[in-house]
Length: 272
Image 1 (cartoon, one colour):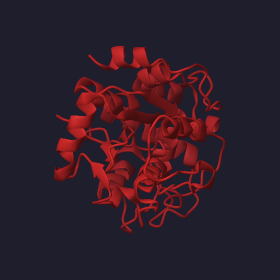
Image 2: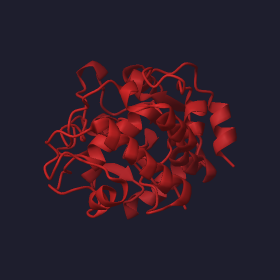
Image 3: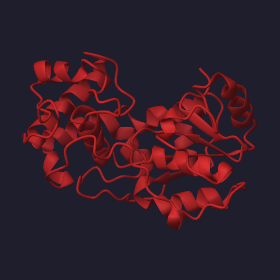
């Protein structure tokens, strides 16, 4: 199995387990910058050099050695499950992707046909009932996670705890897990506990939000998208995420965590 979704600086100063929709573009660019003093020109997900990635054959050995030795600082980043699934909907379902096409080809036509979802027309720019369509998308996301139908769950809406657990199960150990919602504090701790080749000034780092502009703008406050049934579906999918990463299930309008992440608890519960 190895360490899917794991990135490491070429200098081996830090190891990061990518969790989609949790500031991964910005984190990847900071890692790149900390080695090279420049940002990658383009979407960091497309980089084939300058950063070790599990998906690259030549990176597998160095990543495995450092992760299993537990001598390189390892971290990941999480996000409120309510805002994460909303972001996935607007970016991946309603949005036109970098290649000018819909995400995963026939996925959106399938959702329109089977779940009655609207996405704002061919270009994603027309008016549509965002709340109704999002709630129908939630049914689809739940079906993929619970029954793997009509397809396997996508990485952008599968539970964060699932991504994070593969690293632990295969012999990794996290030194730090922080929240997207307090990004600068969390990333400052990573940089403070690692030795980087180039100095990183977090105040000057731009946000690399590669999904921004792909889809329509969210027209309502977060809490308006979640009625009682929607909250039930979200809890069914992300119960462990709420519990382990201390987010407020009762109030979709509160994106901030309500407790501290207990690393021992995360390793114990996700290491089975």
